[in-house]
Length: 351
Image 1 (cartoon, rainbow, N blue to C red):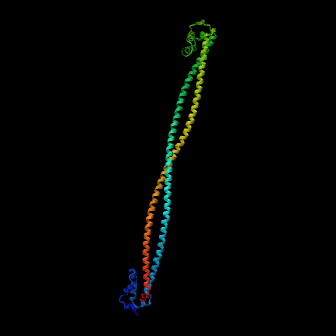
Image 2: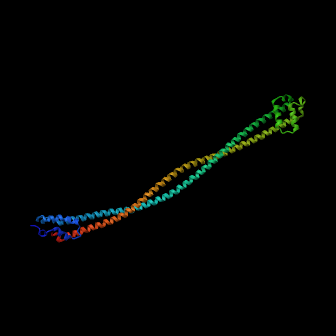
Image 3: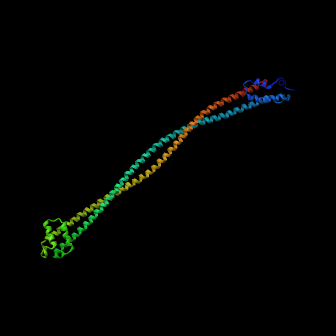
């Protein structure tokens, strides 16, 4: 037999909309429409499964699915917000560490720059001191060579004159004064007596007269006049040679002491210069490394600050979006719940 209620109704979809009311979304009415058509197709539908029950079951499945999706989205939202909180804290720590590193590294960099500048000033000073010491040694060496040459010349001259005077005294004392006057030694003694001997004029004149042969062979050496004068000249020259030798020895000792001290000073300065040159090179490398490290840290800091700003914006946006999603889902679940309630009504199930 056919369904009496369906046959009595000119339009079942209109009756269902009246039962559900204005709260039921249009999409749900579309879902119910095939069921109404199925009821209209024949009386056999009455003995099949109730089509509204199927719709209710489908709506309940939808309700369960929406609830489960909401739970998953809520879990994801909480995870995201946890990420916002933990990442924000990590970023704050990273940013603070970067700022502290930049401050510390900048202070150390400035200290290295100042130390390098001081070392360069020390290097310049020590280089000048070394050059001064080397110049002093060069001057002392030149002076020593000059003094040594002068002493060698004086020594040779004095030794020659002393030897000539000795020959003259020996010749006179043996009666060979006339023969001596013909020798080169006599000329040397005569030149010394004329130019360098410290003698009274009368004594000098007497000696020169003998050496020139003016007194002839009649000179009596036993009188000792000329012999005494010559011995006096010999003693004077010997003393001069001794004084010159002592002066030379003192000059040599002073020169050697000066050279020893200056060489030691130059060695010390050279060692300092090498250390300072190495330090300047090392500090130059460290300054470059610190500068690069500070630059890299500043770039990383800027990136962290930018990411933090973007993260804060994203987290705030996500919160707003989540509130809107929750609202929409609540409205969906409410509509589903109300529709299910309406369809579960006894009158609806009797259609």
